[in-house]
Length: 88
Image (cartoon, rainbow, N blue to C red; front, side):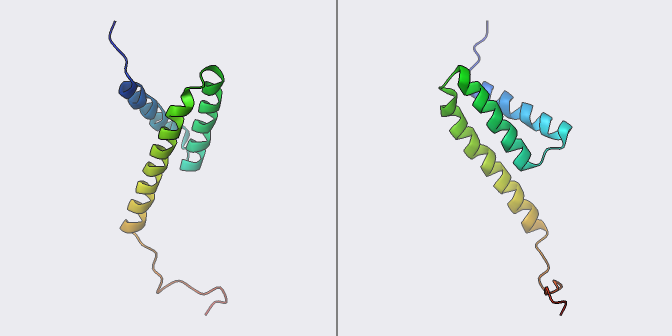
């Protein structure tokens, strides 16, 4: 029987969430909330899951930040055309 290590488990975990995000059309906040619920349930059976969750939460946030920065840098807001709240 082949060995299934931490890195393979992590890769499969992330791939599964990528697929679910695509199928369900999840936004990042929904993805993180769903992953939170997953780990809350997993920790009921194995409290050592918290060690993996802290690392995974940081990774997920980093991916969101990279995506946000990429989108923002590709098309920054046009402040010259932005109207002031009073319409001037």
